Structure formats: C-alpha cells, structure tokens
Length: 439
Image (cartoon, rainbow, N blue to C red; front, side):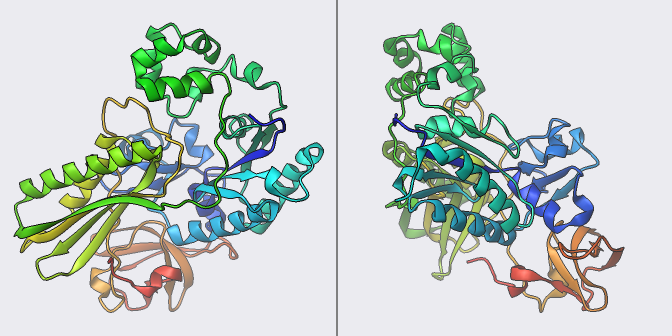
C-alpha cells in the first residue's frame, strides 16, 4: 500500500438508468430498469427507485418485473451511455495522466501521477470533481473512494453511495475492513461466502485469523493467496492507463464447412474454455462476450452480449457464447468459428465459485435499414422522430404497432401516441438512425 491516499475509484450511480431518467423527464424519480427485455433477459442496471423493490443487476428480467411491475423497462441506448462516459473520462484525465477505465461507468485514477498532486487537498479535489461531473453530464451523479490501494479505493466508493465520497486515511485500512462481511471483497459471492463460513470466517476480521494454508486448501492457491492479502488491505496493483490487450479471443478454421449445430456447439464450448483459461492466466476478466462466424461463402459476422459484471468463469463465458450461437444462422455451414472476451479488467466481479451459470442477456438484434419500415424493431426506450410530433422515445411496441412518448432531455413530457409500426412518418433518431447492419 502507498503512504498516501492517492488512488481514486469513481463509480457513476445507477449509470444506464440515470442516463435514461435524465433524457426522459417523465421517468425522473420513478423506477427504471435497463436490460434485456426478452424471455432470457437480465437486468443491466436498476434505478434506486427500482432497487427499493429488490431489483438488482444480473437478476432475471422476469423476476425484476414481478418485484416491480410498475417500473419502466428499457432495452438501453449504448450510444447515449458512451457519450456520457466520454465526458466523465475526459474530466478524469484532467486530474491525472494515469486513468484506468474499467467499464463505461467506472474507473481508477492515480492522483499521485499528476505533477501538482497535494495529499492535503484530496477532499477538495474530490468535491470539485463530483460537482464538475454533475454539471458536465447534465445531472448524473457519482460515488468516489480514495485510498492507498485500488482495493481500498473501490471499497471506499461504496460506503457513501449514491452521490457521496469516502477517503480512507492511511493507517486506518485494517480497522475499516475488520467489521465488514467477507462478501465486501470483490470476487467473493454467495458460493465463496459459504465456503468461508464453513471455515469460521464471516467477517474480514475473522478471515484474517485463517492461515494462508487453510485458505489455499479450501479455495486454491491463487484465490487463497489473494483473499489472504486483501483481508489485510494488501494490494500493490498499479493504475494502468494503457493496456496491451483489449481482448482475448480464439478462433478455429475448419478444413470442411460444418453445418451440424451439435458439432458447432462442441467447438464453441472448447473455444470458450480456452479463452477462460487465457484470461485467468493473465489475471484478467471481461464483460463483453463475442461470437465470430464465417459462412461457407466467406461472409463474416460477429454477435456480442455484455454481462452485468466482468468474468473469467468458463461456464459463464460458454453459456453466453452458446446463446449467441443459437441466435446465429448457420444454414449452409460455417468455415470459421471464434469466441472472444473484451472490456477487460484485472478485477473479477462475479463469484469465484459460481455453482450455476447466470441467465444471460438476449443478444442484441441487428439494426434494420430505414428503407424497410415494416421490419423495423422498435425496442422500448429507443429514440425516434415523428414528422409531425417531433422527437420522443418508444414506450412499447407489438402487434404491428408502436407507442411513443414525445419528450426529450430539453423538452417536457408530452403526449403518448400510438402508430402503425411501418408508419412512414416515424423514424429512428440519433446514432441509431444510421441503420447500420450487424457485422
């Protein structure tokens, strides 16, 4: 650990849902759930209003709807999230040249890498940063932790969430950690918590009482050593502003085209497990799982799905890749198949010993050309424009019709109107209007 509290961790509060509430005035102060809206969908983010009903990230959307049936369920607008994230990351780079984004809504910053770093002014620096982010993003809030290590900074950012901050004074790390549940340590989920409970460790203070041999014998050498060190606040990882690898992927070209789904699933399973092994060997994990296919006619496509948290778990990666394969058209056979993981971080946020695979999100549907209005897929939450009524967003769709709420971030809540799905006056708005096809 460092002698000063100079590593900052920033987490945007309920990010996806907060962007939707910001851009849709009628949803402000109301429960909002962002994620897969299909039968196998999972929750990516829930607003704090929805969390009061027990809705949380990675929960199946079916359960989330049952817990909060009056919530607005939206499929998400990643162009809007990326734009807001870009503003935040640019502001963080004004603090220091060493910024390590973990995802669109989360990053570490090495404050000591700045030429003008003053350990005595960290409180003022954090207050100014939080105020600037709220101003620059038109109302988004963040939670910030500052400590002598990445582990403690991440822990600290959770202590006054949402819209708060906590600075861990050097020397107080072990005292702060002692009463916390072991599940406060990233990577310690329900299954690992149960293993530690059997060893007599329910708090981090009790975890410290276990020897390295006891932890390694129960959890394995790597996981045991990691928990032994983190329980003592020991974490010497540096903030990495540049990563050599942005993804880990493996692909296989077949000597003869394969059309049999059983064979393709076997190959996908093997590739996914190879990727997982490489991730673990590199001490990395990732959120975005990608399947690459090349057809018999050399036409190449990729499909991706983004998980709620980074993973290096072979079963999780395999299940996500399998879901993408099931959604792919393999008619005529494939000559190449590949599996990759991107959105890399050195922080695994799912359980170290997950007994069951989570329900994965639906793969994103391909965008459709505006020339084919009847085939357009109107997802709840997407931005649209009507020639007569102006800008709004999709409230819902089905049975050949689409319902639109006319409002934007700059305009108040307007009328809710229903149109035919192929109404020529209705079109996509924003970046989605480009009508790009999945590649």
